[in-house]
Length: 260
Image: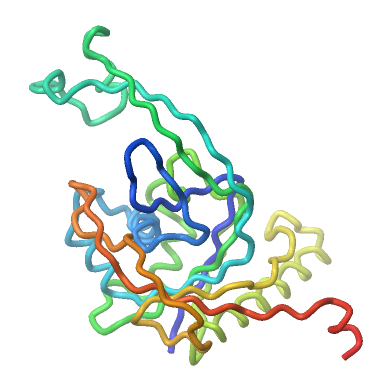
């Protein structure tokens, strides 16, 4: 079966979970809703087009390979916002519009926001029946996105090309392995040709495979958890639960690998 595989690396990324009070946490691997939003931005979908985003969400099984969880960064965040009553009858499509209300109408919101520093993951999409876009079309959109791509929040720009590839494999695990092999071959060829800007440093080894119910994973599940990242209604920021299956990838110490 076909897989669309691409990488996500950034100095800062944030994969939100349930927001309780003033705390905004982050997971270690990308959320389903964040990947759907990334694909929508690449395709040039309007954020208010809920039907198109729902078709993206339901059209693909999704798996993530965690390369590096990075380290946690916690930010004390303040933001000025006007109340809804102050925005009535005013255009507020942009942040600039919001701040054009009288100063005495502005309030301050305090929050604590978590980010992952220098985290890296791979994403694999398996098309399902009725998929709205072929993997090759999505790959082209990721190479030449219509809108700016970011990893969870607008301040989290990618640090490396997403390098999307369409790979034929029997499972997501085999697709990830083929992707890393192709990446390394391309990286070494670019280095020999002194075209180092084509790709960057080697990918870290995969340490965890995460996948949903609609994926042929290729590895046995070690743990299943509920994750509230299934988009229900974008306009109201409503998300539902889904099963997330986790397979731990055993690592072989370098000394043992050398001995064998």
